[in-house]
Image (tube, rainbow, N blue to C red):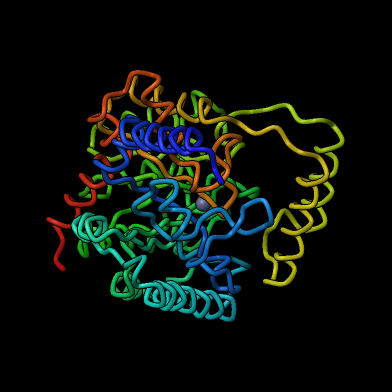
Length: 402
Ligand SMILES: [Zn+2]
């Protein structure tokens, strides 16, 4: 028999724990506001059979995001990226990219429908608020890499009709639309191509968000000049804090903010902080990059093999990762530069985004905890978690022809 005194103690402990959770400002904020992550690559796993409706374990290679862990981490909404792998540009690879893109869209719709008691597709901010009220998570869709549009301008409307609400114009290599910030061959169009300029205008007409993450600096300035609407960077950081071509210079952040846009800060370690790694780690990584052609122009099987080799290095030599605090340094920097209204969060989970103390979506509240510790108010935190991005989103919707 359990001693009575123990029962009293257990009851007291439970009540105490319960009250603590209830009064914890982090918990309260996550209940009150809508939290949005503007870039996750989880669909890359979903097309290979990753089950987004069950709780997977990040430590066992189980991906970084699924619906149960979104609930745990207090993340209400996420943009699922339809990632388009790019190889050399010829009619066959364009067709292949298009087919893969269509397949990814249908996998997302199928899986969300399968778990319709947990999640729903969102096409605008209101849908996300509605889903939260019903206790469900919201899945937005974005296209990462306009390679799959080929030279067919009507495909912009096609991907919109499939649910995409932003298009990232390029990925790590130049494409037919835009130069990339990380193409080893340098500039090809000196920014946007003529077709790229047409794509921007068509996206303005339809009312889609233009994502400037990944494109070259020249292409960024072209987009800003051409677009009639504010634009977004769905997963990019501040170059002043971490000098990487994928990040935005202060001049770019200021120009983006002046036009009402928003920068969504990302977890990808090499964009957050330059951390010295041991020489043997660097050598092992270099060997894998060389063997797998810098992860460019690979077929699916070789890419999976290369990614597995990369993961093995990470397991063999535990790498030092940036922290939530390093990540929030980027938010602080943007806020100091242009104010609280132009910054948000786009983790890049399942696409390389990871922080020491936010390794998967179940740990998202650590971001809120750090923001609170640095003196951000609940109102500020709401803007960072969704308010700023949704302001741009609603503005783009209001001026669209759809
Ligand atoms: Zn990306």
